[in-house]
Image (tube, rainbow, N blue to C red; front, side, top):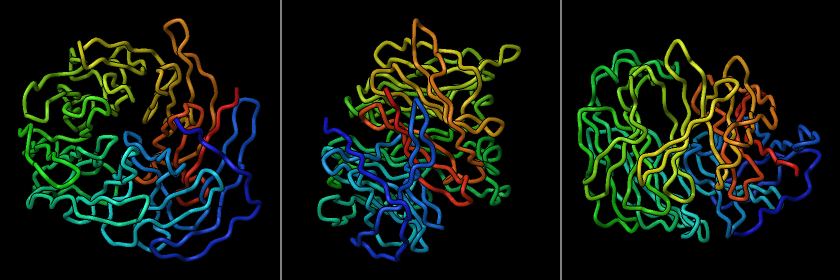
Length: 386
């Protein structure tokens, strides 16, 4: 694995307008330097910047490049941040790009993303874009695009576009109505070269959070979406041949709140978090094994909106909650999670692009997250010290 190289920082960020392919000066600055960690604010542009959704790879080791999304040109587009010198390069220049829902395929050095009614791929080497497939009419995409590390397999959820009367600018305003109406949903999957696109898992349930196993790409993880304490069974597995549909971490009662699942790099372990039902209500982080369905769960001192783990499952990170908006790093010792550090990110969660969505980089020593603590969304990097 290529070592992540971090360079010196500019004292004063410079701003400039750019088009696709243009390079922007570094904006990075240190905002915290404590005995156990350093926090670097990677972007300072007054427009919103955000990391990719935390379930999705955003780092290309061959390029030492961190892909993120920004509205600094007026529309959401994809950008790359070089972790060697913190310089920024604009990767796309389009409209209707779902930036936070993009995913990096590190082995093929590509980014897969949704633009309008198409799934597209972008080469990180040449910046050439190509259409992978057209999306189905009458359906919307729920959550992010997923791709295998080699870019050979891609998948996305397709949810019936039904009339919704409760949708407003407030995040999750339409969740209850969409859940109750049970829109017909399916997984649309095919090859990264545009061939063999087909549908699996069609059902009258709201399907979301579709993820390909990074090591076993014929296996898909998906969820039944809705309020976690109302969904009967959150996590499911199915083959790309539409066979073997089965539960993962079977829920004893709908009141058990489970969600925000993600694959470990080994492709067989799935991380998630949640809360036990009343009267317990303790928050926990869990890890399930797709091979036999076994799982382990570790209680945390407080709840988190999203969690992620290093490849070994020895360190976990969460982003706290509205009462305690902090990056929480936990170490697994003797079967229990111990809080290693807390850093207040002070994000508001007011809109999806401002959710912290912390994610470990492949070296397990750096955590990327988003915060709007400065008024607009910006990208941050927390570096763990030995």
